[in-house]
Image (cartoon, rainbow, N blue to C red; front, side, top):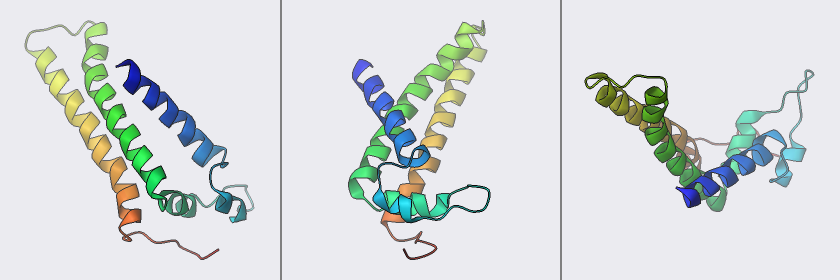
Length: 124
């Protein structure tokens, strides 16, 4: 848990540096902001996930995050006092299903970009 927790922390820090601070890909600086200062997130995602190493790190981080969520969701409800013999297994199963559905949904983005299903909206 300690090692996977540190990898998840590194994943969160990289994610913020990647899409919020925009310091990991030099092409992000070439993207124009709209009049309200919003950047083209679609293009940022496509350009960012075209790199196999970045996508691989995201998939690893999302996998470990799903493991943490599948365990943490049942612990969360137990901490709130839901310790019923009938309810606890259902909450644990629901938490696992939720965590893995999140994993599948979020991993579909880099996979769709790497396989060419999703392409850049504009060329730089």
